[in-house]
Image 1 (tube, rainbow over the protein chains, first blue to last red):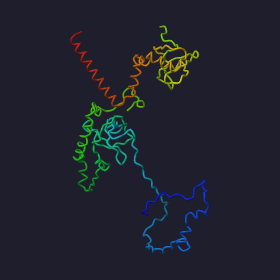
Image 2 (image 1 turned 135 degrees about the vertical axis):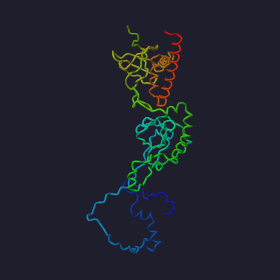
Image 3 (image 1 turned 45 degrees about the vertical axis):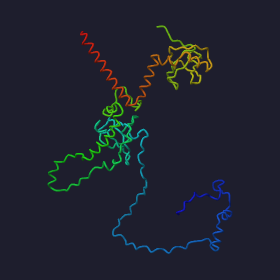
Image 4 (image 1 turned 90 degrees about the vertical axis):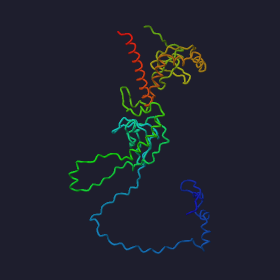
Length: 231
Length: 134
């Protein structure tokens, strides 16, 4: 219906669950069924059944399996996007806890559609490139950098997908299998890194000592109790 | 060797156990051998075991179980809070509290400052050593 419908209100107030204020006959009158009948010459307007449309004749399938297998139940569940911790906002300094860069302090840029966090070192300071990181392997510190001028819109999950190389299986390739080309980063990705980091570095320079902070790694020392530390 | 800080009416003590941990209270009466009636401007007057109290050097001049208003006036005129914050014990507690709430970046900055200070000291020391060879 193109008309915008107001929420339907019941003409029969509910006294208790299952009991209305007005009886069936009263409701018949209130709903105006008598007027509709009058308008339609004594009986309630009705549609006659539509003639059944001829269905296309289905041929028996060429092949069907011998046993009836039980079909799995339909699952319409859509996983929700990962909830971002409230302590993580764009510009937060994060401490990476696992992987090649464990202990490194890194700047958070945004959350990607897959739920992973987009971070950058910046590369010049600590060698961490523009990278995806899982929220679970990260400590969020309370230090925030102003990266409102940073544009990270071109970085999505697709940007980080591995390039599929299809090899043709020929004999010569067998012998050349030992000579694998070293996978170098394409220059565009290096350029992206430089462009992004230029803006981030500007924000970092404005805070004293922050560049040294980001260059150093986090470690636990004697007497530090992680459950008592304030990050 | 003799005791210097006595439990008396007007003695200011620090609560060292329980929900009021870290608060300064004034002993306003003694209940029995183990317990005192204790009061503070921001708390309801209640009894506390002496084991929960650490006596301080500060004593104020009040009569037994003063009214809250009188107690507050006496504490203001004796400047209890100021004396506490200037005492070495009080200063230590303030520093401990501040250290506990440092965030990671602040801890890093302190580390840098300590290194710088150490370097300055060592520089001066080496200068002095050169001037006065031993």
